[in-house]
Each structure stands twice: as structure tokens, then as C-alpha cells.
Image (cartoon, rainbow, N blue to C red; front, side, top):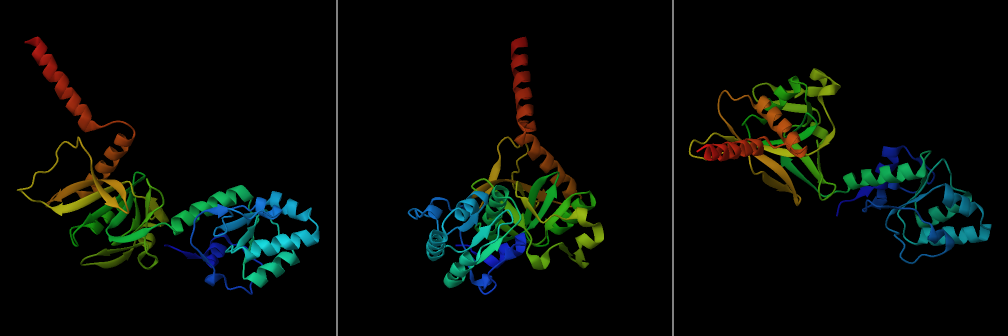
Length: 311
């Protein structure tokens, strides 16, 4: 199971940390869902999602403020001893002394943020789903071409990086070269990112390493993108039968998710960047309901029917 240290949440959202005595790097989060304790503040702890990040907003704080101190202390003690990993207060609310005391006694880190509760809840859930998503690392190049995330794969030295460089010069954006980290954030969505160590770099045989961001500017790079299609580059084989119509889509699979895949034969003189651009635009057209191959097929059938009627 994927996990993340609570300290990364503090750093990513610039949270105000109220319990520095607790080492947030040792507090581990392993579920992407977030919970707002409501009935628990009234003393009902059955079916409590205690393993989730706990968030308190205006309503919860107002409810706690209206309680007698003795009752509030009891709620704090029950909440902190229930096994929650952490507690975050929104809208600028800060923990009182009793909450801090109960948190320190039970090793529960407490933070606060100025953000509104619902937007923060949604954003944290989205971020955690990405961070905790199942992931794999593969060899390839990931580029953004006309808004489509294109994963270029193939044997080492076949020209993936060269194709990516030409695409960058034509105004498209690089996500990662050589190593692609793929995360499954839902049953329909895969996102690709670059390892921190190779981010923004491309390796070109005979030249070496180039820094895309330094050479072409920040508009030429992108941190992450959904993987919409895969292009597999392979050496041209005269004996192999290649698809020339594209009436049916082929797929490849990552982490149980299927992605449309095109096999492109490589031979001298073929402009890979133009081919990738055409494949991206064609894929977008298909998603919008237009299939050029199907349109040609329909025209041929209509023409055959017309010729038969004329006879």
C-alpha cells in the first residue's frame, strides 16, 4: 500500500503547525479520503473513519465553543485516543490549550489553514489520491501534444528523445524523457510525471544531456499530464502487416487501465514529430465523435450501393 508522511501535507499546503513536539515525518497517511468529524464531537464514535485525515471547519468549531469545558475536554480526549493520524482546522481557526494538551498526550499532530473548509477538503482529497495512487515506472517519453498526453515507447535508440525534441521545437511540451512514473488515480485515469532527478532533461545520443527548460523556456515543459494515448515506435518490417485504416483501436494496459495504442513503423525519412501530431489530432477527433476511417468506410459502402443501383 502506498503511503505518505504528514509532513509532506504540511509542506505542500503551507499549514501552520501547532504541535512541533511531534515529528510529522513519522506520522504516516495511507488513505486518500478525508473526514470531517461531526457525530464524533457529540460523542458517537461507532463507524468512525479514524484512519483518515480529520478536518474541522466553522460548524465544528462553533459546536465545540458552545460546549462546557469539561465536555469539550472529554470530546478532545476521545477524539485523540481514537487513533486518528492528524487534525487540521480550517478558516483560520486555531486549537485551544485543551486540544493541544490532548493532541500532545496522544501524539496527534494539529495544524491550521486559512483556506475555506470545503475547497480545502476537495483539494486535499484530490492531491492525496495522486500521491497515494498505485504507481509503476516505465521506459519512455511523455509529451503534451495539442492537449493530449502522448506516451512514446520503443526500443532504446529508436528515436523517442529526438521525436520529443522536434515536438518541443514545434511548440509542444515535455513532461519526462527516458523514465515515466505512471500513477492510477481512478479506473479511467492514468497520470504521468517525471522523477525529480531527471525532470526537464532530455538525453540525446552524440550530444548528451540538455536542459529543456533552460533552452526553450518554461512554456516548453509540464509537470504532469493524463496519459491519453500510447505510440509504440518499432523498426520497419517488410514482412509485417500494418494497420492502414484504423477502423478498430488497439489498446495497451497499465495498472489495469487500458490506453489506446498505435504501433508506428520507423524507416529513414519519416518525420516522427508530424506523425505524432497527426495521431494526437486524430485521437481528439475520435473522442469528439468523428472517425476518419469510419467516414471513408461509409463513403465506400455508399459508392458501392450507388453503383449497384445504377446497374
